[in-house]
Length: 148
Image: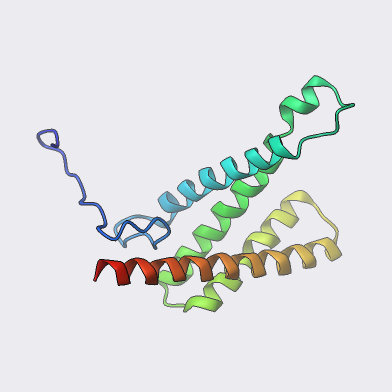
């Protein structure tokens, strides 16, 4: 059942969660969704691995926000640049590597980290991005095989 006059898009029958956004969805829109996913994951990380027991109440309350902001920002930047590069025709390993380098550089520059930290952050971000893209591509392939 759909309300009269609504323009609903049919769901993807494959049920794949990590597929690429369709061309009619902007890169910004899909990246904002990635920001929220990353923020939730970072917030859970901040709750589980919060400050030591000797810290005050405010330290415990604020503990999830910094990791949530970091993880959400990384996901947003990586998703946006990967979407833009993919739509421009850059293939799998290169779009993930460049997206990771970009997000690591932006986060390092905004955080004003030293050059050595920036280099390691960019490298680690690039590796993490390629691994997450590899997992995404694997899920997309499995989902398309199930749909057939």
